[in-house]
Length: 343
Ligand code: NAD
Ligand code: UDP
Image (cartoon, rainbow, N blue to C red; front, top):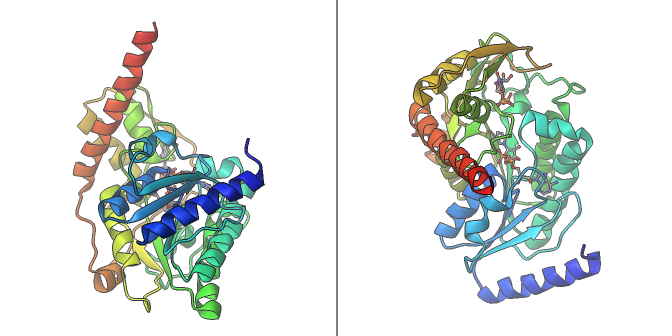
C-alpha cells in the first residue's frame, strides 16, 4: 500500500503532465463503473483528456482496461470521501454505488460518498473554476405521488428507511451543488437519472435488468419482487451518455435539475416477459417479497430536457435489451469457456 505522501507526489506528477498537454482535462469520478466507463469512452472520442477516478468498490478494472493504453486517459484509485487535488476543467461526479443491494451494504459510507464526496469535489471545482455535473437520481422523488415526475416535484422520501442513505445523500448533494453555485459561483449541472441499463452492468449488480437477463440466460428462476405491477422507465446507456454531454455543454445559466430518462413506462412483470421472449429462455417466474420502500411507479417527464438540451432518448427497450442480452451472453460464454480450460 502507498503512503499518503507517495500518493500526493504521484498526483503532482500527473497534474504537471496533464497541464503540459494544454487541453481540456475532465475528471470522471466513478469512471470504472457502468455509466462512468461509457462516459470516459465518449469523452476520449471527443478528444478530451480523461482522468478516471474510482475506489473500485462496485466498478471493475476490466471496464476501463481497453482505455489504459490511450494516451489521453489516466486512472487514479481513490475514494472521494478523502479530498484530492487535481488540475481539471470539468468534473462529472458519478461516484456512488447505484444498485440497492450495493448501496445498502455499507449505508454510512454511501451517505458519506454523496455528502462528503460531493463536498470535496465541489471544493475542487471552486478552486479550479471547473464546471461540475452531479449524477443525481430519480430516487430524489422517493415513492412519488406525482406521476410522471416533473423536476418541480419535491418528492416523497422516507428519511430513515433502507433506501435513505442513497436517496437523502443524493438530495443533500443537490443542495450542496446549489449552495456552491449561489455562494461561490460554481457552474453546476444536476442530472436526475432514471433507471439506465446496458452493457457493462455487473452480472451480480442486483438491479432488475441485469438480474433478469442473467437469470434468463442461465435458465435460473426469474425473481420478480412483489407482484410485478410496480413500474420503471428504462433508458439505454448510449442515450443517457448523450444526455450527460448535452447537459455539460449547456449554457452556464442552466443548472437543472433536469430529468434524464426514457419516458416509456413498463411494469416489472412486462419486463420479465420481454426478457424471456428475447432470450428464448425456459426460466420460470417466481415472486419474492417486495423490498421495503420500493417505489410503486417511476416515469420521467422529459419536457425540460427536450426544451433546454434538445435531448430525448432514441433506443427502444426492445433494441436496448437485445444489445444488453448479447453483451451478457458473450460474458457468460467467456466465463464458461475459461472454466472448461481450467478443467
Ligand atoms: P456503478 O455502481 O456501476 O458505478 C459507480 C462507480 O462509483 C463504481 O465504479 C464505484 O466503484 C465508484 N464509487 C462508489 N463509491 C465511490 C467512492 N466513495 N469514491 C470513488 N468511487 C466510488 O453504478 P452506475 O449505474 O454506473 O451509476 C453511476 C452514477 O449514476 C451513480 O452516482 C448513480 O447514483 C447514478 N445513477 C445511476 C442510475 C442508473 O440507472 N444506472 C440511476 C440514477 C443515478
Ligand atoms: N426487482 C425485481 N427483481 C429483481 C430486482 C429488482 O423485481 O431481481 C424490482 C425492484 O423491486 C424494483 C424494480 O425491479 O421494483 C427496479 O429495481 P432496481 O433495483 O433495478 O432499481 P430501483 O428500485 O432503484 O429503481
